[in-house]
Amino acid sequence: ARGTLNNCGHGKTPWGTYLSGEENFAFYFGGADKPTSDQSRWGARKDGFYAWEKHDARFDLKQNPNEYHRFGWVVELDPMDPTSTPVKRTALGRFKHEGATVTLARDRRVVVYMGDDERFEYIYKFVSKERYVVGQSNTDSLLDEGTLYVARFGDDGKGRWLALRHGQKYPNGSLSSENDFNNQGDVAIRCRQAADIAGASKMDRPEWVAVHPKTGEVYVTL
Image 1 (tube, rainbow, N blue to C red):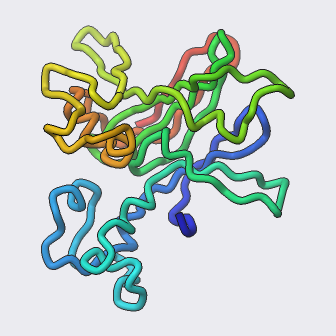
Image 2 (cartoon, one colour; image 1 turned 120 degrees about the horizontal axis):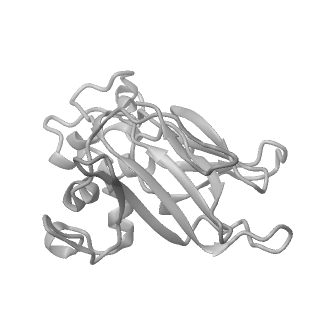
């Protein structure tokens, strides 16, 4: 994807890179006489907030509707290496990322906690498939394979993590072609709709996440 914009909070990885969240990307797009339901789900409107679509067709939803999908990701970058190229870690899901807080599970798999910073959106986490071993792990791809989860809280205050996998079935439906999820890429791109079907708990603008360094407790500000 070409470029990154509206970057919000950053999280540091154990291997020294930073994860930057693309937040209010919808502000940069406009031009659709009537935004689709998918575009509207992310805040698109006919006239872009910054009017970029009037000067660059790339941001015109009518001319280039798929350009919209290039933003809303977590971007990994190395601030100590000016020759490096930032990478969008799409397995972490697409939404309005406030930030990405990184920690290691007991088995040393990488866990990334994230909030979708808009009213009535969700709290997510990503757990890597492979474990992080200092000096041995391929950190160039460590965040490309794993499982994306969304949080659901019960009336008793207890919560559970719901896996957002292609083909997964929930009481509300399934993440399959019947709901326009043809592969895991579709689940990542339409992450909000996948969380809707999963029955996640709508939150009041989940923003910063912090992990207690000793107890492992996770705190989220709304």
